[in-house]
Image: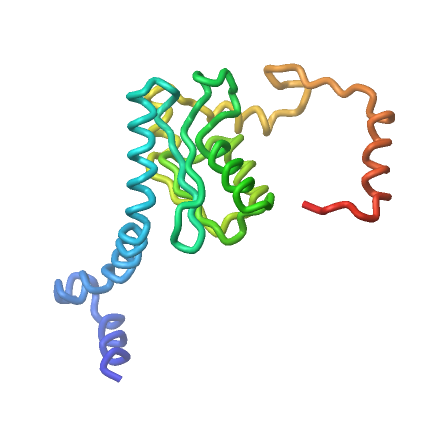
Length: 194
């Protein structure tokens, strides 16, 4: 009842008339929720950050790392291995996703959480959506990555372009023949949908 009355009074008073305590109290719940999530995820994100620092110091790859968690336990870790493996797809998220899927014996990570040291690039974001995790936490933003030379905004721009306007020519070829495999997939009774 007291809360209801307080809310009604707050609505009637202008912002300038409200006591400082009431003004600050209105914003706190959202901040507290964010802080709780940060504290809960700290040990996993801290591990990812530790891995990213080790990766830079060892020279094995870029400053990126990912930890995948299921039921409060780390089930997979990955660091960027692009330069050490000469594999442009060996981003931290991809490496960790491959390890987690292999360990769990599935191609979906439905009950898992992903902790990654940077907002995922378009390739990793695609892989994340295919694996369907419960949620993704990230530390650095795409803008942070761009400031140190890891720019991927152009890929999003390219995706929006018609095929004929992309930087790398995308040329349709032998579609009719390739449709055979699609028809075979449609007709396959024991296929595993994903």
